Amino acid sequence: MDLRRKKVLELICSELSIYPDRNDVYEITLTEADFKRQGLGFDEACIVLGDLLEEKQIHDYGRFFDNEKGRGWCASFVTWHGIRNNLSASENQEEGFSPALYDIEKGVLHFKGKDILISARSNKTRAQYILEYLYAQEKPADQHFYSEINETIFPDENHDPRKYYRACEAIATKVLKTVGISDYLIFTSGNRAFVRINPRYLA
Image 1 (cartoon, rainbow, N blue to C red):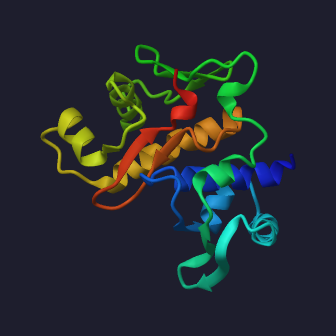
Image 2 (cartoon, rainbow, N blue to C red; image 1 turned 90 degrees about the vertical axis):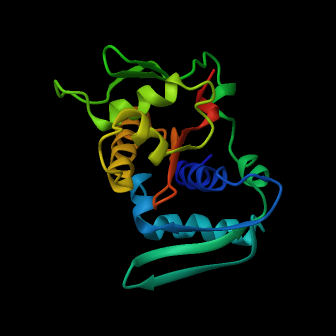
């Protein structure tokens, strides 16, 4: 499979996976920043999206936008399963697959044979606290709201969802640069924002 197509499909799957009914149709918006995190230029990503439109993987319509907030693509997709089946194989079906594991003591994420140091700082960072919290949960793939994490880790600190979003983004960037996986973490922004680990990479 073409690498650009694979990256776009992984991004779409990541966005669609937050919805409860994966057999329904949902509208999502992909921005130039989203494509950039995947290592894709806006124009080349749009070529792939155009192909998906022709193949009827995009439901009803797909449209570009270019305004004061930036450039992007807004579209409805047939189903998560329909898009997901276009990927050559999920990571957990690959020979020698092992789940992503987090070493709390060392602050290192072990993923796809690589050791990803989350932070080199002597003091524990918010990114480390987030992974520590997620891996301590019975179901790290469930939605865990930033506000709940903040209440557990920093009960005396005023909650600022932006700090958690930036920390999640930092983790995602490290994972992408080290092992080429863009959807290890699924996270959102806003007052009711949450983070979860993609179940594809859990045991």
